[in-house]
Image 1 (spheres, rainbow, N blue to C red):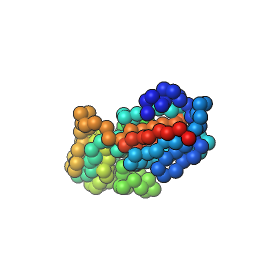
Image 2 (cartoon, rainbow, N blue to C red; image 1 turned 60 degrees about the vertical axis):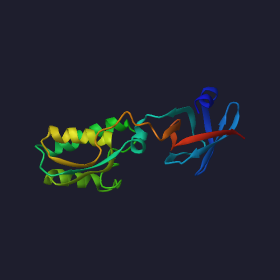
Image 3 (cartoon, rainbow, N blue to C red; image 1 turned 90 degrees about the vertical axis):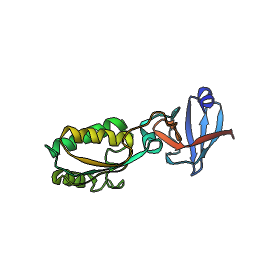
Image 4 (cartoon, helix red, strand yellow; image 1 turned 180 degrees about the vertical axis):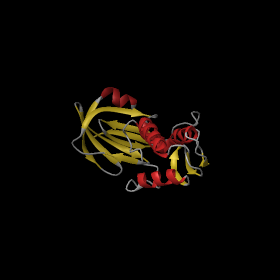
Amino acid sequence: MTAFIAQHPTATITRAQTTYLELQTEEGSYRIKFKEKAEAKLKPGHGGALACFTQHPLLLVHNEETATVYLHSKPKDPQALREEIQQAITALYQGWRDWRSHFFGWRYAGAEHLLVRNLTEGSGMLLERAPASVAQVVLAACEKYGAATTVFGSAAPDPTVPAVFCLLCLGSSYVIAKGFEVAAM
């Protein structure tokens, strides 16, 4: 992918399917097949700079171990803790994902309300299957506000574990897969 991007730094999506996308570059048309696609946000007509990453905020969900975190004591200031959790997760994802994406099974509707209730009551789930990096910042915030937690899974990112998934970006469009195969059309 690196060599392709070096030769074709910009492109426009002409077709997006489940298993591949088609691009138009200055030099011609290409099909990129996905190997075990995990996630995509592709829209024909969108274009921009091509880039490929093995480390990126979008990849945390796919390349890190996960943790589920439960709260079992009241924090000193539930509202301040909620705000710190929001700020920490937002900073981690750098605008690529909604900060509420790991509360209560990816259901954004009502997730923030449930979080506030659990923080106020000092009991309940805080995160469900969140990447270790997300769990780590939430646990640090809870500790700062004196809230006791229980963690199931891994809350410590392991930098020695190789990335399984990579991210192909085309402007604001992207696809996450285990690999890509490029062919001229």
